[in-house]
Image 1: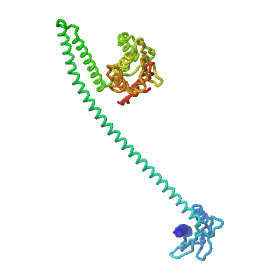
Image 2 (image 1 turned 90 degrees about the vertical axis):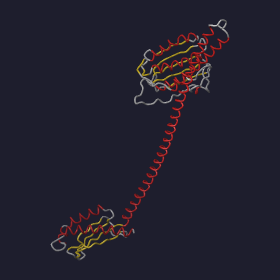
Image 3 (image 1 turned 45 degrees about the vertical axis):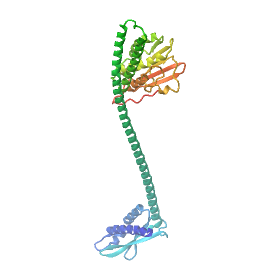
Image 4 (image 1 turned 90 degrees about the horizontal axis):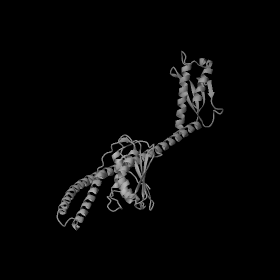
Amino acid sequence: MAKRYRMLRATQEAQRVAEAVTSLGRGPVGLDFYRLRRDRAELERFLAERLADRPDLRYVTVLDRFGTRVAAVSSHPDAIAPDVLTATVALMAGGSPQGEVRVGVSTEAIDGDIESLRRSLRLKVVLFAVLGVFLLAVGLLYSLHLNRKNRVLEQARQSSERAAYRVNLGSGLAHEIRNPLNSMNMNLQMLEEELQGLPGLEGGEHVEMLHSMQGEIKRIKNLVDAFLEYSRPAPPQFEIRDLNEILNATARFLQADFRQSAVELVLDLEPLLPSVELDEAQIRQALLNILGNARQVTPPGGRVRVASRAGVGGEVVVEIADTGPGIPAETIDKIFEPFFSKRAGGTGLGLAIARQMVDNHRGRIEVESEQGRGTTFRIRLPRRRQRGGEVAPPGKASR
């Protein structure tokens, strides 16, 4: 197969040279070898160009009809070597042979070309195989990614539907509970008024029982109201506000409660605090919930400090630090969970609502606490909300 291929290449080249020589030496009758010998330099220059284009060619010789050499060129000192094959093609003119062209082709050069082609082919096969495996792996990984993403989206959809169902169910139950509570509270108030009008029943044990029942009804009503606020929060209405003004107004509103609890409320506000785009009602509610918790856990004679400052990341920071008993390390990660409370009479929704309000502003709440030395809540709010309707990520308490 290889030898046949070599001879085919030599014969093809000899044929092209014969056609060129025939074209150059065509005369009125047959080939004009006189003119070819006269233009021998031009003919050999043409043959040299053919050899230069084909490194596998060793020599080209043109002979007339008598076997006399007309022109000859060689590209190698040892043109006649064992590895050189000779192909001979007749010079045809007028339907009869007029001479011949002999072309020597190096089998080593052809074998080198063949081996080079084989190496190139093997390299391409390997490259295409590697590329195919790579594309197959990428396609498989992408398919797995899409499958996993579809599962996550489906789980999120189902979770969202379940959450919406629980919210609707809880809200409906909360409304159904609040209505009879209001009726019970009104009936107890009317019963208390009637009992107070009867002689000898103004301050008896039954009156204390009525007050206890009214207190429990109020506590349950507060729990229901807090649950409704948590389960169906109103969308925030953003506007650019001075956060220090909101902190001052909130502190004034709570001063009476703090004085009654014998707890000092101290403000340490940065004078040049940048303005913030926020929903005042929601931020005020978050502050009230955190400050209310701080007042309740701080013993008489203690202090709650409210500070504001600009954060290094461009956000605005509000710190609320108390001198209370601190939060145990095993429960600090649970304080923002709904209905989690270690305080008697607490609803367990105040901090959950506070975090929800901060989440609505794409902010976050951080908590640092040491038992016996107090707790610090740190609220970080971006100065400007991001446009495009992005949903706030879930908040995270960090120690």
